[in-house]
Length: 440
Image 1 (cartoon, rainbow, N blue to C red):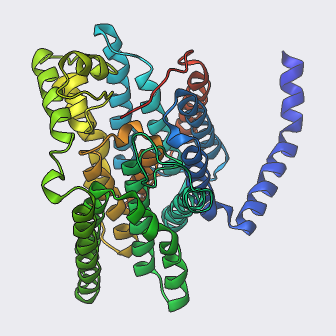
Image 2: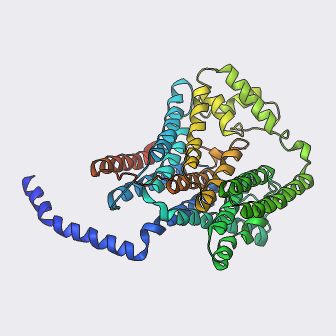
Image 3: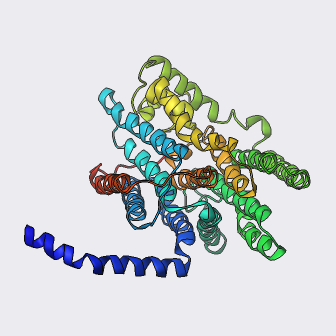
């Protein structure tokens, strides 16, 4: 053992020189800035084309990869600084994941915690990887990932003419497999494009940021997702308010008015405005409320809503979700689960009191759209959508870090990196069964 220690000690200068050279090369390539963008783009593309990530295998592999990235950033970066709200965001998501897992004690399915663990990793990785100057890259990577996934689905739809789907009809719904999920996914991308264009300097930069709209706008129209359009308008309003610029606010208000008009047309052309919420949503929410009243303390347990729907459902169809993150959490996890679900998505919004600028507005507008839409559909069960939202939330936190944030000590970084590596390994073995999750 002593001989091994001596050998390692003698080789330490060589290792140190290699680390220094690697850091110099990374700085020369601009890697500290672009790494966050590469991460967000790659994750959204891989998860997006994998059916939106609805199956457990994607949760495991995604969580493992993201935790490994977080560990690598903690060990390799020269300085890692995180603010209190950064820590609070990870803890809030972790607490929600833990409560989901604990619900197995009273009838829940522990596998549901695995998906939540993916979201913990998705928040942690960019927080320890990115710094303020990398926020546009993080958001731009998310926009690129959303655009590529949407372009793939749109290309398949236009050039292969697939037959109408039994449930989705002739709507654009691939590769996520659900038109409403693709709708909010695209809406997040549109808000990113508009927000980043409004923050850019120069016409060429603005045109480059708006170029994805050539793919995203027709895709959103072809999903006919009324909830996505409504969330998009809310996001535009948030973008105008957070910019605080009157001229910019007028421009965004004009765009919002046009978007609202298009949304109204979509509602009218599809099935009528009177059915905007009453079509299927109200029965889901009523059954979720009944589920909560039957289990008022702890809820029925994660993953049990489908069974409750079969015995108490108001319609002939079947669903595994309440089509609302918040009501679903109340039904399956009780009042504490509802509070934890709200806390899991609310922390980035608490950062808005710190700083307002165009980059922050570009990040928070799509995040607000996600938070709103999660209340009217099963976005939590569609990782591609939630990951897109969480990357925007992480960007808000990074962009609003107060000046003078202390860097993590070497001991803290090593402890957090070790925990991340353990979770990366745990994610691969946490659940042994794949499961079949045809949500709807």
